[in-house]
Length: 120
Length: 107
Image (cartoon, rainbow over all chains, first blue to last red; front, side, top):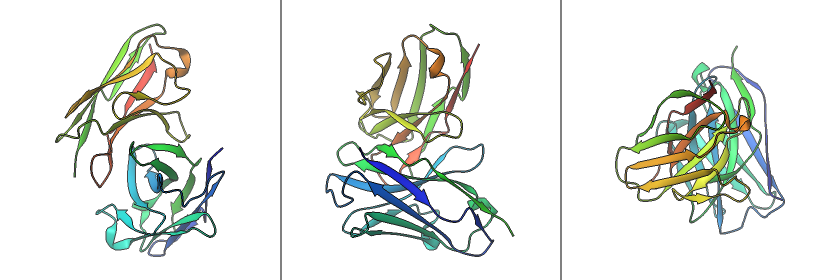
């Protein structure tokens, strides 16, 4: 069955770049009936959509992060990626990757999440 | 951006109770509304999409209704495993947005 797994550093220094990878197994990331997303949750807070990427590489990004954010995809590796530049303590969060099935536009499969702390 | 507002923000209830959570959108989103359940430290679980479509494997005590700007999630008879935080999310337009959550606690 489809599984998603986030990976990346758990600690990033302020002003540096946060880089995460989501590895997809059990299905092709090129499936045209799906697209892929990053979502985060600050400690004790609610859920924030970061952005989404389609298998051809087009993206939708949260305007609140847009100038710092790059989301990309590598279909040959069945992975997609998040890069967030110039991080601050406000970017400390549990980061999730997820699948969206087109036609439902809900996050139906999630990774377990990876905690990223921004601290010197 | 479409703002999603849930009510109540928290509530307490007993096993066997019928519970309703409301989600209001700041503008019409048709039926592009999903509900999630999240337990502490875990990834959210999709319960309902398209306002009323129950995900495979989700117990039938969960149901969703509504369209336009007002939506409800109903749990017909609370079970011990249902105590969690629930979120709504709109899929009508970008940026996708979530409600602030409703924490359901044991009375």
